[in-house]
Length: 405
Image (cartoon, rainbow, N blue to C red; front, side, top):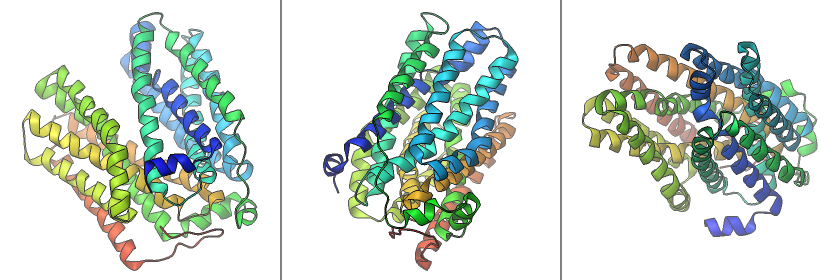
């Protein structure tokens, strides 16, 4: 399937969900990159407090993962998305009032994390349910590209607004999310598919058990943990190494390379891959790029090779993320997807925490050589898991409609 075919066959409600995803990323990333700056420079809180707010945000996501999955499973992903958006709007609006109390800021940071735990897994499940066809790899590649466009534009918007008034970017984010909520209100639930009554009627604990009995779902959770362990390095260790060895400009170069590859290559490269190899092979290829990235980091030096490693890292990023979502979406029934994506998100958050904590231990001595080999081993493990599962060719155990990837 080509991208043109995908877009032409996508129903209006599915397009609205993609637009809502774009607006949500636009509003969210007009805030998050500048949140620490706001807390430290505007409100005069210490950097340790600002770091604690980001920890609370992750804690909110982690603790609410099962609650968001439960709500989506019982009441449907569209309602869960709306609740998540209302929480985001309320949180941004309260930030915009200029709250300075540490306790108040902490509660809002926690609430923002909870809102993400509600919205993101439900949005993925809703998109699959509303889109016909079986090329979910290309579908999630398109979703990821749209999301990254929102990230890029949101960061530019936030940078412009924070220079105007201290809380302008919070107000803008709230207004953008209000527009997203209006668009989402027009989306109607999809018609029930085969077996949906049975899966929707499952108790939440039973739905969890059904997914955890699927060998592919378990493999994808482990792979997601490894991927997020890698991905957090883009936000922590890579910039730290760049600024220490080549100065502040090198940090910008890291993100320029990453953004350029994502925006220019994600859709054409993934469209090309989707026509030539199965999703399993694409997932293994992505982790192969990650393995090469961290081997380069460990063995070679120089800014040019460092940026080549960032390019390889980004190629891995743009193939792994949609491949994981695609394989999960075709291994469990549509009505179990909210629970499945919540479990993936939970494992991904665990990977991020482990990756960030591990990297911080090596950062104290600014010697990441052994740490890069740990990442190489994780990539190799992920490749072996995918290849071993594919060779066994086991059908996942589940209830409801099934399509083999």
